[in-house]
Amino acid sequence: DWRVANTRSMQQALSAENGYRLILDDAQNRQDRQITAIRNFIQQEVDYIVLAPTTETGWDTVLTEAKAAGIPVILVDRMIEVSDDDLFTCWVGSDFREEGRRAVAWMEKTFGDQPLKLVHLQGNLGSSAQIGRTLGLDEGIANNSGWELVFREDGDFTQAKGQELVETLLEAGTAFNVIYSENDNMAYGAVDALKKAGLKPGEDVTILSFDASRNALGLLMDGIISYDVECNPLHGPRVRAIIEQLESGETPPKLTYVEEAVFDRENTTRELIDSRGY
Image (tube, rainbow, N blue to C red; front, top):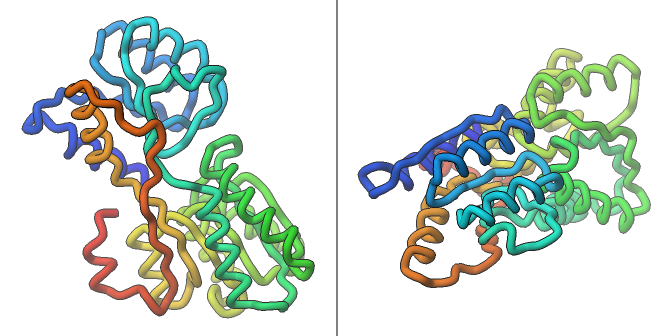
């Protein structure tokens, strides 16, 4: 799981052995709980706050409180929209729009002028990953007259919702030949729905996904998923490096984009899968 790997990376990089006391708060992917957690951290007078925001908007008030307390806020994974960029110290994460463009480029190369009927399983609406990956796909649809978007809906980034949405489409008799899933969990649900209906994912329907987690790459090797764009969750060492820069009086870059790979059946091996940290 992407989020589990991200948390483990933070725990390892910011461990007691490395000189840190890490206080974790699992907000269950809810912004209200994240805001409460930040206020608790401010009251505890922590030295740094690391935030993986659930959505892009709604952070001005609580981050103003953190700034007034003199606590630097480091964002990881998703970006935020605030009235003043000084409300956060720096951000490290993925270029989600570029991820979408890479998936589109693969479809253009693979299918050429063939007509496509696309099903789009979106992630949590308003999150940076959803916004960027959706924009990438929208560009592709605008530039390819034979691509038809037959369905688009929020799948919550969860396997259960991904399966539910695809099952509903199949029961309704909606015709489609490509599923663009904004993360691996929803892709797993789509695979289950297709198999349940007697279809062969990878043959009857092409599946593109994002994250490139170990389990997804196994499905890719088996020809079930056709293309997966990496979203690297191992941000712990990067956050530690930023904190060390700040502690030594240096100014880290405001934005740091991580390097990420893309995977298809040709460049995926069992050795690569076994060596991955997530």
